Length: 313
Image (tube, rainbow, N blue to C red; front, side, top):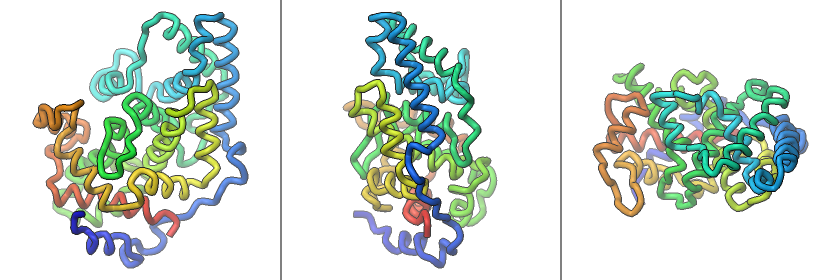
């Protein structure tokens, strides 16, 4: 175990957190009162009916209804036709297969059903629904990692990505300022300009919880079932639940996992294959001139851990 306890104790102390930095959100009366869950239940029903009406070949894909809805929700923010740059990365990271043709037809038909529903994105405070959907798809595509001291490729579209992006923002805006104080101020703030806002934190936590539930549920109602299980808790407790489930509630574990990522993405059985290339790719995604060194990496991870651990204090 790495020796981070003194730093962790300081960055999670009341003196550092200053009391009002983290606010508790109230528990919902019922998950079924959640507007996004209500919208999803209605949309699932519409998609399933549409696919069933198309006949046997399309109805065979009703088990993918939840995935189709997430694909629709993440557009156009995280998927636009003919996109380049970051958009092209999302195309490669969370592809939408066009074969067999029945699969493409089913996705399109479900998209039409989604189009017919009332607008839900942009209507809920603190909720970046497109971001949550895109991150969920990353986990469903690449898998949900349960090892608390490692990262998975699914994390690249989630918490790990924004830790790198807020690092890029730090270099661009305050390269000579106090790193820990700057990160503490901006990680999890309401303003999204620095790359890791509160809505981002919540989107990543919800996405991991949703995908973990969906990957073991092949029913046509997998998305609403996952939301019902997730949204039974308040935002505060969902964030805490993610921290406990993903990292066993340990800042040390989070640091170790993030260190491994910054060291270079592991592809398949070949560890650190083309490490120089993957590190270059990470700097591009982070919009940074360089990746953080080990001390800087630890600081990033510890500030993130402090936020996750101290929601509601």
